[in-house]
Structures are given as structure tokens and as C-alpha cells.
Image 1 (cartoon, rainbow, N blue to C red):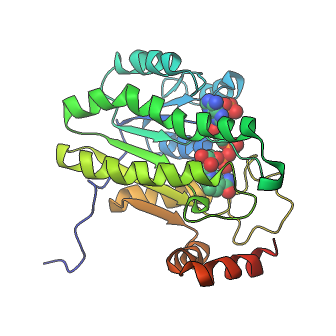
Image 2 (image 1 turned 60 degrees about the vertical axis):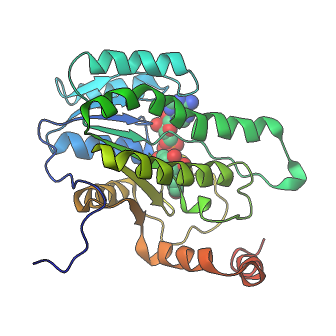
Length: 262
Ligand SMILES: NC(=O)c1ccc[n+]([C@@H]2O[C@H](COP(=O)([O-])OP(=O)(O)OC[C@H]3O[C@@H](n4cnc5c(N)ncnc54)[C@H](OP(=O)(O)O)[C@@H]3O)[C@@H](O)[C@H]2O)c1
């Protein structure tokens, strides 16, 4: 008898013959996950706005990669892309990895920037969930994974527009898990630390434990193979962030000020 606790989701260890839809696949983490799944024998549909980037990735995987360009802010476009893919057969795995990040502080508050983050990072996820959920529920299977961020754990400086969208995604994923796991639908939440992608390229501060998108993709595949709900990495960084998460505010605020110098 195994002493390990039972996995929270059905583990995904064999990607051969599976169909995955990666939304936010034109660069960074989503692109690395798409390539990793293709190399493991999955059929992978890739979505984002930059159709040229998606096409050039797909050209190296003829027959296995399907290009579905879209803007996640456009619910009708997301539903149409889902319809095209679903017409070819069941979708086993959906990753919402689209996201935008701009540093923002309250003394430069911009409603436009706040809403832009909400529309892509949070409402974009809702559009994808709206499109895929009926088929996942009808089938009683499949897996939905959302990419959050450690920036959603608690309030952080520069994270006025970004952090709240990631906190919302965290809560959303938790509720989805509670509602869907009993229906046979897997739900997971990916909480990366710093990953070297176009999203973080503009950061003007040292990013602790910065990792490559390929290493992030490896950690994500390992998490899905474990049947984990929360997949956070790199652990040497996220362990500290988890500790900060449970500190009382009286200790948390000065600790963050001291660590970030902001
Ligand atoms: N890099 C990090 O350190 C880090 C840490 C924690 C969490 N994350 C999260 O990881 C996810 C991937 O980010 P990344 O670091 O890999 O950055 P990235 O390379 O900039 O990737 C972002 C992806 O989202 C897509 N996207 C953005 N706006 C979109 C829209 N309106 N419609 C459709 N697709 C859109 C982009 O494609 P197009 O521009 O072609 O549309 C791109 O494929 C994001 O959710 C991010 O918040 C990243």
C-alpha cells in the first residue's frame, strides 16, 4: 500500500494521441509547453494573436500542430476556435497561458492599464472556460489548467494591475477544482516564479531564481504527471513566497519592503 496521498487529479503521464489546446502559445512558457507536448506525441492546437509565430512553430510539426490564432478578449473568436478544434475530436487538455504584465504603482494609477490586465489575464480565461466547459462536462473527462503567478499570492510592489488578476485566477481555479473534480474533469493551477520570457524582459530588477521557459515547461509536465492541483516552481523561490503568504500583515508588509527595497 502506498503511503503517498492520492493525487488530486488524474495524472497525465502519456501524451501520445492526446489533443491539447495551448492558449498563449506564441512565446515564452506557452510556446515551450506546446513544443514539449509535441515532442511527447500530443496533437497540439496553439493560439495567441501572433499568427506568424504560431505558423512558424507549427511548420516544424506538420500534421501534429494546429494553428488557431485569436485574441482572448474576443469571446466569439475563442468559441469559434474551440468549435473548429472540437469538430476534429475530443480535447483532452486545455492550458490558459495568455497573459500580460506591466509594472504599475498607485501613484501612477491608470484605469486603462488596470482594465487591460483584467481583460486579458482574467476575462480571457473566462472566455476559454466558457468555450471548453460544456464539452468537458459532457464527456466527464479532460483537464483544464490555468497559469497564475506567485504575484497572486499577496500584494507586491509594482504589481497593482497584474497581481489582482493572478489572485483572481487562483481563487477561480480553486472553485473550479471543487466543482469539476467530482465530474471527472481535472483542474490545475500553475504558479511560476520568474521565467525568462518577453513578459519579464523589461524588468529592471534582479529576478531571483530566474529559469528558462523550457525548465518551466518541464516542471509543468512533471506536475501534471503527478496529478497535482498546484504546480509551483522553482521551489527554492516559491517556498519563500509561500512562507510570506502565511505571515500576519504586521510582519508581511515590512518584510516585503525590506526584500524589494520598494
Ligand atoms: N515569465 C514569468 O516570470 C511569469 C511568472 C509568473 C507567471 N507568468 C505567466 O505565464 C504566462 C505566460 O507568460 P510568459 O512569461 O510566457 O510571457 P510571454 O512570452 O509574453 O507570453 C504571453 C503569451 O500570452 C499571449 N497573449 C497575450 N495577450 C493575448 C491576447 N489578448 N490574446 C491571446 N493571447 C495573448 C501572447 O501571445 P500574443 O502576444 O501573440 O497574443 C503570448 O503567447 C502568463 O500568464 C504570465 O502571467 C509568467
